[in-house]
Amino acid sequence: MATPHIRIILLMVACLLPLYAEAIVRHYKFNVVMKNATRLCSTKPIVTVNGKFPGPTIYAREDDNVLIKVVNHVKYNVSIHWHGVKQLRTGWADGPAYITQCPIQSGQTYLYNFTLTGQRGTLWWHAHVLWLRATVHGALVILPKLGVPYPFPKPHMEQVIVLGEWWKSDTEAIINEALKSGLAPNISDAHTINGHPGPIQGCSPQGGFSLEVEPKNTYLLRIVNAALNEELFFKVASHQLTVVEVDATYVKPFQTDTIVIAPGQTTNVLLTAKHTTGKYLVAASPFMDAPIVVDNKTATATIHYSGTLGSTITTLTSLPPKNATPLATTFTDSLRSLNSKKYPAKVPLKIDHNLLFTVSLGINPCPTCVNNSRVVAAINNVTFVMPKIALLQAHFFNIKGVFSEDFPGNPPIVYNFTGTQPTNFGTTKGTRLYKLAYNSTVQLVLQDTGMITPENHPIHLHGFNFFVVGRGQGNYNPRKDAKKFNLVDPVERNTIGVPAGGWTAIRFRADNPGVWFMHCHLEIHTTWGLKMAFVVDNGKGPNESVLPPPSDLPKC
Ligand SMILES: *[C@@H]1O[C@H](CO)[C@@H](O)[C@H](O)[C@H]1NC(C)=O
Ligand SMILES: *[C@@H]1O[C@H](CO)[C@@H](O)[C@H](O)[C@H]1NC(C)=O
Ligand SMILES: *[C@@H]1O[C@H](CO)[C@@H](O)[C@H](O)[C@H]1NC(C)=O
Ligand SMILES: *[C@@H]1O[C@H](CO)[C@@H](O)[C@H](O)[C@H]1NC(C)=O
Ligand SMILES: *[C@@H]1O[C@H](CO)[C@@H](O)[C@H](O)[C@H]1NC(C)=O
Ligand SMILES: *[C@@H]1O[C@H](CO)[C@@H](O)[C@H](O)[C@H]1NC(C)=O
Ligand SMILES: *[C@@H]1O[C@H](CO)[C@@H](O)[C@H](O)[C@H]1NC(C)=O
Ligand SMILES: *[C@@H]1O[C@H](CO)[C@@H](O)[C@H](O)[C@H]1NC(C)=O
Ligand SMILES: *[C@@H]1O[C@H](CO)[C@@H](O)[C@H](O)[C@H]1NC(C)=O
Ligand SMILES: *[C@@H]1O[C@H](CO)[C@@H](O)[C@H](O)[C@H]1NC(C)=O
Ligand SMILES: [Cu+2]
Image (cartoon, rainbow, N blue to C red):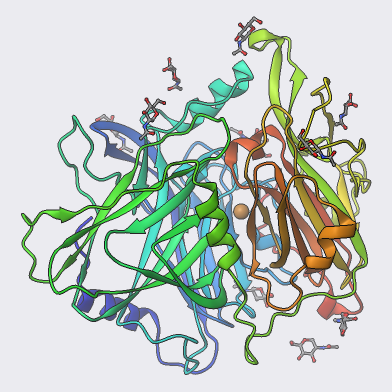
């Protein structure tokens, strides 16, 4: 990727954002096409949007109506999720295949139609079927309404930074091989920053990302973790980062030299070009504090001060060890909602549904697999089975036999979840949903277990933001831990890491009717069944009800 020139970028943004005060309709066309791509001295065809990897950035303002026409020119079934967009009453446009829509089949088209309400910041979009999101993803930038400033100093320039993961092999072959054997899939061969791993030993450089900066200027980096299976540390040599927003909600600004970002999460940081000259390393490396093999290669890019020659030596930085739990914990604990008069944190105080969900791995029989067993994953011991038709359709048209509404609100067996495990690692299978009345409130404690191994699970909820009111190690203790909940300025987001061997408590108000997926955003855990859905009933009148489906909704 060429060094972006500030003037060109500003020109592009100016063209994209006409100076209308009122909300407008923004049209995008996504052609899903194959494209040969060369990384790590190895070429393979990948699925892309408009031939780009990462895909195009969508720009819009709060309140805009966004129309994206997706045309599927590849052999795979496709669907696109607008990750973090609340989709008020427009579940048909949410995207997860077999949850809110049937996939867009080869040769077909679907128009995603949604309005951006009450959100501003960086989100992203990605394929939500098979493992296509490995290469089918991009940023979604929601600018504040015209004339509304950021609640932080206006940056001189903005830059999207998408972190990813790259396999030399075809990613569908990787997951198919794993499903056949019942074992974990091959780890990736590299991480990427805006599509590039950076210089790799034994392979001559094939392009990389570099951001040109001017001394004293401030830059807003909109960072997205689009990796499939790995949480990442992100760092810029000799520069501090000021975190100002996560998952399209403003936070109380704080400084750090390293951010931690899980797949599914987005983080906006301000970076001030405090030097006068030079080239500095930008690096992303994995965070994994469980005995699980990860791709430990560091992806690199650079920032270079304008006028700095290409041959200048890059100032390097050291990355944290991959098991740097204290650093990750400090970062997570520093996140607080801005909770200003203009952007209040509306934390539910009265709770209607008090839920405890264990998130675990497990082992089920599989006669055709290696050792006659396969690794699975579950929430409250239920390994989710994907239906044959979309759940939202089944709900809206009252089609029986597709799902049940008996998802357990508590673990079926209570034991020391993070201590000695039961000897039986088996799970039950089912397409079970948890039903919520419109506008009811939920407190959900997500509890990791030590089954097979404890591990950090980034859990993503569709259709809502939630408040992260508490977090701790070991087993959640309602008597002691609930007293320490932060109900004043907890961070609001759509994806939260449940710490390895610990728990996280979240709260949300079910003010969006529809069927809303909740799953681990480590793609392999989703594939293994670490997923479920909430079904939220309509409220009173049309304004509190799911809209009718669009006429071009794909059929199964
Ligand atoms: C990729 O390259 C191969 C070999 O050159 C070629 O046969 C194929 O058509 C190319 N695919 C695309 C999508 O360009
Ligand atoms: C988008 O959906 C809205 C309802 O939310 C509808 O009024 C509008 O006509 C739709 N736009 C298109 C182009 O279908
Ligand atoms: C996974 O890794 C193994 C061992 O290196 C290799 O034999 C196999 O071909 C790989 N699978 C794919 C789909 O690349
Ligand atoms: C990365 O993992 C490989 C084996 O999986 C190991 O040999 C190597 O030391 C690790 N490198 C780092 C930097 O942790
Ligand atoms: C399969 O079982 C054998 C014998 O119990 C064991 O040595 C091997 O590690 C197992 N393989 C896997 C991949 O779990
Ligand atoms: C659970 O097991 C762990 C590890 O053995 C132990 O430290 C902890 O005290 C146990 N917790 C309870 C509630 O028994
Ligand atoms: C999970 O369900 C399986 C199958 O019903 C059962 O054998 C196992 O004991 C359950 N485990 C837990 C931890 O609930
Ligand atoms: C939802 O419940 C809250 C708290 O009881 C109430 O203030 C609000 O008006 C309700 N909203 C709707 C749309 O019913
Ligand atoms: C429904 O929503 C529209 C648009 O937000 C608003 O103009 C209208 O007054 C609402 N109707 C009711 C019955 O709340
Ligand atoms: C694509 O989706 C349709 C509808 O669910 C399904 O019937 C078909 O088998 C899928 N095709 C492939 C190649 O997976
Ligand atoms: Cu998602």
